[in-house]
Structure formats: structure tokens, C-alpha cells
Image (cartoon, rainbow, N blue to C red):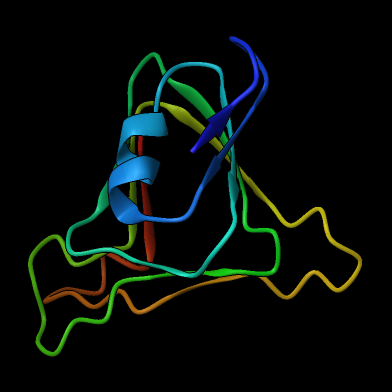
Length: 108
């Protein structure tokens, strides 16, 4: 993980690095595809930007789960971008029991 100052870009390549980088004011750039074992949560009071950087953020579930979304924005602020020329970064793989949940759920 590369951190370049309080408001600078943090580069991550694993789910553990990604979870650790989720702090208020974070600008996070993926440097590899990341497979999550549980949802990524952005809580109230956090403002986070995730740059997919041509990579995939996914959660490959084999069965429906109550909270099977990839990202859960629980009152926080999330910006998702892909700052590359090809813009092929993606978020994939969430699954849930109900139609009220999706790959990304925003609450509040």
C-alpha cells in the first residue's frame, strides 16, 4: 500500500488494504482486481473516492445473502471513478434475498 499524505492517493491491491484505507477523506486507487469476502461499508461521516483504475471490485457469492451487496453506503459519501482512458473498471457480483438490495446499497 502506498500512502502519499493525508488527502493523497492510497494505492491498494488486497481486500485488507482496501478495508484499512476506508477513512474520511480517502482517495483510494485499485492496483489489482479485488475479491471481497464481505461487503465494503462506507459509514456516516466518511467521504471516500474509489478509483477502479481499470480493475474489478467483486464479491462472488454462490448463494443469496441478506447483506450480499458489494458496497454498502450507510450515510457516508462515496464517489466511484475510473481515471484511465479506457474506463473499464467494474463492480460485480453482489446477490441478495430481496430486490431492495443490489451491488451497491445507499442508505441515508
